[in-house]
Image (cartoon, rainbow, N blue to C red):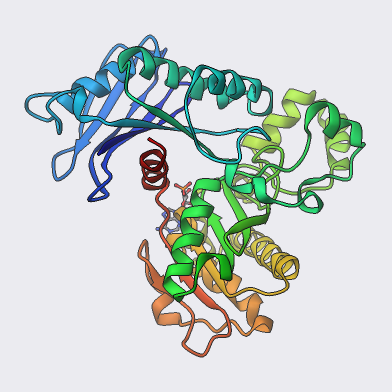
Length: 396
Ligand code: AMP
């Protein structure tokens, strides 16, 4: 079956058409500046990437252009829409309502809408994408795959905050966690790589990208993760602060005369390794090369990032009373060998031994611990689109 995987943002839409039997990507692309002017980037497998400007007042036009490109006589990869068996939609927040992916019905749409409060920037855009697809592809089954669902197995001791209980009761303020599709995909693969059943292995997945989170996966279930009610908590990220003393907010608000919106912009867009490096860059390629050429702020920034990752890994070893496998994934995890090396150096007490030669690799699946290391450490490239396609096929 061919599955169209859609990841819809407020002004952009990423897509892949995946054949679920071969698990090959038939075509992929991106619509940008939806509602502003509009452009489509489209690339069929083995073909040239083509970018064209197209008027996209709404997501419906954007999806129509995607369908046109996929079915085009010259560059298309299917003859008509009937060859697309299902659509898998990435949905950011499923709250406590969704512990699994679901086939989209009217009730599901209502329930996703009820989670809008929890992800006001993302969920409404995800719903717009689903509505537009339903309009243009009536009768094609659609599935929602939630970033939060994998973490619904966390116990209360991991998801409750030390806040007045009434906020959980009234507003469902708790840890949800994100990147669930990636943590699930990578932890399953890690179990395969060590040749153990998924439900008999303790894994820590370090998803280190522009957004970054860590997850403790015990016997196939997420038992703790570093992101919280929102993706702001946890690691130091590209531009997000991660964990800070909450009292800093009042202190800075008074000094800088910032309101809540100003504080949130500071925490989400001006902090992280970008802010910490004195606005040098949010990109680890720039930061690691600056650090290597003697830039002290860049070196400290890389150290802060790695130290925080190592602290989380240590806390999840405690949470699971042990660890069998550690996996690095996403842009930084798959590519930045310096970051992996620095994190692994902190883990010597666990008996982690690094294979430096193997660690000098980028973007490939590889074991980076030595054969006598007490914990197996891997780089496992994530593939959220493939995971969404698999979930979609399983449900339809
Ligand atoms: P992601 O959000 O998973 O797409 O990851 C994006 C981030 O990965 C970028 O902002 C970079 O910091 C990082 N990244 C990508 N490629 C490399 C590389 N070759 N070396 C170091 N960092 C990289």
